[in-house]
Length: 78
Image (cartoon, helix red, strand yellow):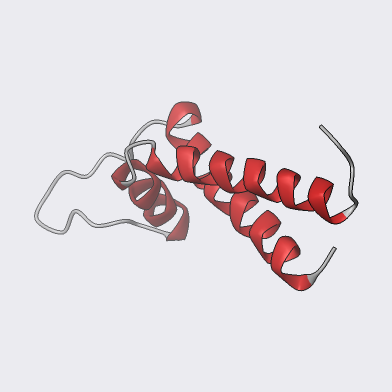
């Protein structure tokens, strides 16, 4: 695999992880005047909820593209 396909694979994994988070964890409670994220995990949760599922779709699309590129690079017929 060349560097481009490895970069696509890591990007797909990261975006898929961000896309799955909203289905596993609840949105962090943010009440009060200073209602920002209390730590970095809550910030990641807020960012993943902001994607509204787009991160999951883009991550899966990149993963499928990477699989096709690897199969094409190895000259396998599918």
